[in-house]
Image 1 (cartoon, rainbow, N blue to C red):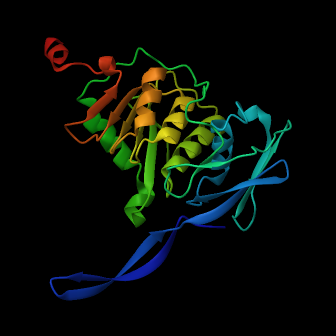
Image 2 (cartoon, one colour):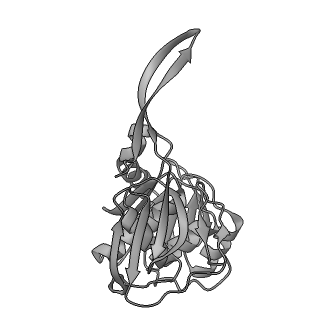
Image 3 (cartoon, rainbow, N blue to C red):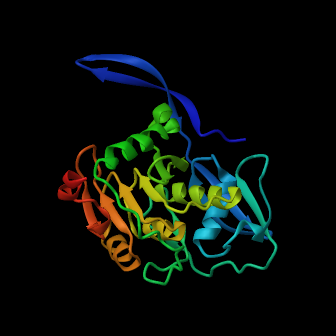
Length: 264
């Protein structure tokens, strides 16, 4: 069975001196997805939570809506294929689009189509003081990253506690893994926000909408299409989030203003 990291050595150079360092690298694995006995595509991913990755991907592609539709899911003994059997027929998409995701993500969903997202909890109000706390929560879930570097982390939270998280070499894979865990474990939070270390491109926003989150927070930039989708679907999109500063691109009405904070 595959592991998410592998030992390595490198030479560290500084001020004219070098030192040989023992370290670990994140593994980038090729893992096929087989649905009802037919190979659909190959993930380039970190080989962890592979069952969740497969189920979450099918959910985000609109192939399944509930885990009850899954008759069986298993990873083969060599770890290079996830076999999913559904209790209904499923047609393999005729066209896959390579997304802007690192690791070469694939989707059959067009960016501007109706995504049928879960209902968003519009009553969420976010205090700016929560941002550093949420970012710390994201840091605490970067277990593999601290061992190897080179991985993305995404976290679903209700604003107070971590609900579910995932790490992967592909940022889009982290959201599939989160979706898969939610379906497999029957997790249905009343209120949720998504934090991620990755860029929010169109496929990241599509997957976030499918999760039904009210707020998406990234350490880096959103794309133009992701901003359009967030605006249309009523999601507050925050980018370049640091300890004490962040950019709000859509629906700023969820952010408690500094004046309101003083009045409380």
